[in-house]
Amino acid sequence: MNKKFRIGWLPLATGLTLLTPFAYVQADENLLNYVTGVETQPKGTWEFYQWITQRKDKGIGRYEAWDYETELEYGFTDRLAGAIYLKGQSIDTQDILIDNYIPKDERYSYTPSGIQVALKYNFLSPIKDGIGVAMYIEPSWSWKDPHSGQDKRSLSLETKLLLQKNFLDDTLVWLGNLGLESTYARRKPIDDLPAGFEWVTDPEMELELTAATGISYRIAANWYAGVELLYQSEFETEVNQERKSLFGGPTLHYGARKWWWTLTWFPQIRGGGEEYPGQTDTDLHLIEKTKQEVRLKVGFNLF
Amino acid sequence: MKRQGYEHWLWLPAIVAPAVMPATAYAVQYLSIAQAQQALFPGATQFAAIKLTLSSEQKRAVEKAAGVRVRNLALSAWRVSSGSQPLGWFMLDEVLGKHEYITYAVALSADGTVRNIEILDYRESHGGQVRDAKWRAQFGGKGAGAPLKLDEDITNISGATLSCKHIADGVRRMLATYEVALK
View 1 (cartoon, chains in turn cyan, orange):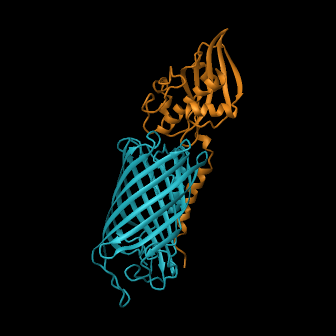
View 2 (cartoon, each protein chain N blue to C red):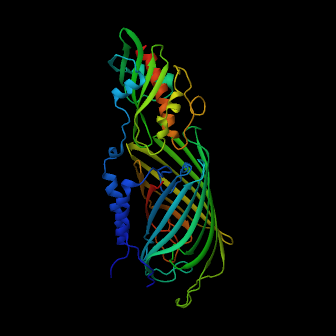
View 3 (cartoon, rainbow over the protein chains, first blue to last red):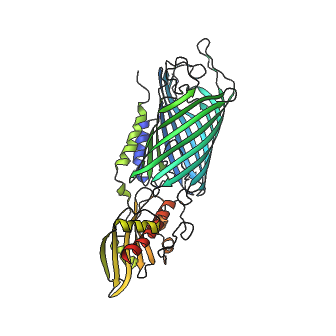
């Protein structure tokens, strides 16, 4: 068992609870978890985010992975914000062997897995310009494969066009994103693989197109309820489209004066492309994705 | 074997505890109604409360003139005078902030133009600058038909665009309400 180090979640959670009354202001509040809004952090202010995502169930064996992103965002101007993320993951996969994807059982707790930075520039405000438009660019570097949990060096660059339209006195918000991510990756060799198991360690290039949309409605003071959809299509240089998936589900958002949280249940609705041998859910993409995702994001403004 | 992953749900206390705290614990009341009345009409001797509910016809007329929805048909207004001299109207209203309502008051002169506005309750994290005298003074002299639009005749406050827009919309709605129901 590749056990790295374990963070004491209870002290962390308790610390956040105690911190809450003293946390200060919030701005770039995420009404949805998988679709990004166009607002940026106001000039000179900081915001702290903690993301936690559970991915579960590949239809065989046991698969449960958790992704963590700890993010700090700063407003350089009222239109330009930058962020830095520390990514981490934990995984528990048993009795699943898929050539080139899942080479062996793996189980470990929180392990740092990558870092990324992001820049977001707001061109138009949905509140005063009728429609909101922003651009988002995010280079990242990771050293763990989030799907197998194995060592894999990846360098990615993601760019996104962000759109937002508000309705009904800004109580109903529509968000739309179009994104392109290019990734250069190389797996690390594994010594103790089963005989005949394929585990390619040559460098690979991958392109991923993303389209996401969602709406969120203010159902009461401080509370929003919404729904969001995420379509992803992956291309590899030699095999054209490899995989596609559509996830969608409901989102609940709570925003107070000083902090907020957003929770999304995000099952895979449709998928296709590569399948593992014996896959019974043939209308899903399960080679890398899972049947279920749940994401919780919490944001606190610091200064 | 102990199942991995249970510790993640220990995040829940961090989420649930603050969520159940009453949001109003953070409410800041800057002025009471009486204080706002005195601030906007320092020489007034009488504030006569007027109880009025807009009819559906009046509501449509206000919405058409102001270009914004009327959420509350009940109107809180006071006729203001100094002795026998009418000074104008004091109107109390609420608009949506990012999370909660912003309570503000509009003072109209006897000719129906804005004397000034005051913010009574502001519960948002950003945009406390809407209380600044300079920002509020932009509304002075505005009458029915004034645009009251951000970046046109009302300056925006970065980080508080939504509050600025909703207050400007609210004042435009109050001016239309005066024309339809009080004039």
